[in-house]
Length: 145
Image (cartoon, rainbow, N blue to C red; front, side):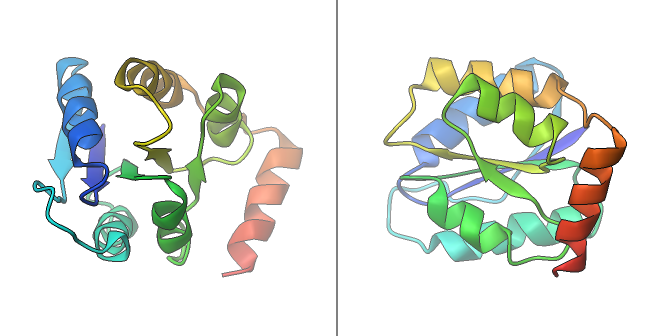
C-alpha cells in the first residue's frame, strides 16, 4: 500500500513523524512536501496529493496543516477524493468504514504525535464496510462532483 504524506509549514514536523511511523509499519510512503517551516500554501500540497491518488500512484493520503481544515477543503475539490478531518477515534474509524475516505487530515495544533500515530494506524487498518447503504451514500457523493 502506498501512502502520500503532505503538509504545509504548520504541519511539517508532524508529517515527518507520521511518514516515518508508516514506513516502520511497512507501508510505502511518498512525501509531497513541504520539508521546511518556511510558509507555503496548503492548497498546493493538497493538490499534489489528490492528483497522485487520482492517477493511482498512491492508495491513500495524509495531509496536515495547523487545523486540518484547509487541507481537507482543498483536497475535496478533486474528483474521487474524500478527505476527512478526524480528532476522535470514532471519526477515524467511521471516515473509512462509512465514508470510504481516502485522505486523512490532521491539525498539528490540535493533536499530539502519539495520538496521530494511533489514529493513523487504526485508519489504515479499517476497511470500507461495503454495506449497501454506505455504498449508495458514497456513490451520491461522487455524483456531486
